[in-house]
Length: 508
Image (spheres, rainbow, N blue to C red):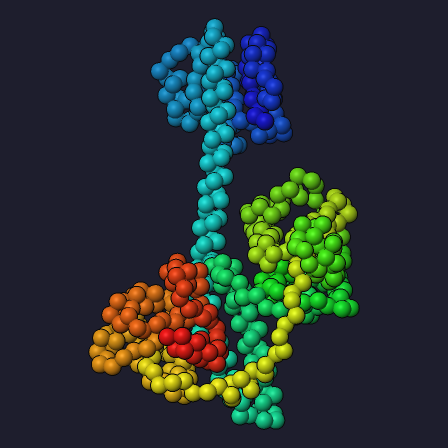
């Protein structure tokens, strides 16, 4: 709703202008002197368009016009001059005013048209400023995402080395050494989940669903949540007495807990209780909630915060929508929750009452029964050597390259090593025998993994390719996967990589 301020010392002109500008949806304010105009602009604003008499207060109208522009740069000012003059037009131009209009006013339709145009200009400028602000925010988030992605990629390489060595040494260790390796592996797996979460948030990589219960997820994130919530929020966990499994990426589920918890914390500035509850849902109730035909598992997040109005509830899942002050929130937390929930085939509903609190209900489909687990160490020990084959390995991280080469050689393969795509292509051209498999990092400086795979395929059509990457959503990597290419996401264990190699060579 635009606000129009008319400042003129002549009460007759003031009344006629105000009456002519009276329009449904417009607020018209009138002032007979500069002091009253300033008061209205400061208290009843913001003012969108102001008509200011240049002769106000004995010729101080230009000063008022300048003050209005300084108070709010988006305010458009039309200066009304005693007569049309070059000096008046130049003054308006120097002050950055929208336009001028001269007295005596004999065409009120013309001045109304100027006001309407000024209102529209202000609306367009406000929309452009909002769009530019969102663009700057998105550019900042993209820069942060790129930084997080680069850090995550390097950490993924390090964790792949740790996990692979821990796995191999664990097959031979006993007693205290085995216990220590199990703790190292547990810590590395937690770090790997954090890295995948970082990569997912920054690059929107694909999910890696796994069977998990809400009870397990609660227990895992409880310490992190307590640190994030602070002392004034009482965190209550109510696990299910008979937990049913769900199929969801564990790192994504951790994001759901964390984002809901932070949202609840901010809604309870004076403190309060936040309850996470796991509930099994019969098939009929899940179907009624908009879910599938089978039973479900519901996560309830209940806070005692300030609640939300109906208008806010309708927009909470919109990206960048936030009711927080500038700098206090990005408006991404609940939109991320909504995306994760949708990807998992779940439903989300929210009940909220101002000054009472908010309840989120997320219902996941119950996962099917899993096959009996196979011990990881036993699987590693029982792995049979691969048939004699030659592998071209391209990896720019030296420690990870050495680890992968060692694992491939131990499996009976001949390995050609290269530290870049260009080195790998040169090695392939110099090699006289067959090359059965290319194992390459997906994203490398210079020649990328997918580009290297395409170049090798043109010269050696029988050579298949396997990409290992920390950037699964990189356009080239995503296109490679969409075309049926095999991709292993970092961080990985050597045994998982060997299994992928075995599968490709077997099908070849």
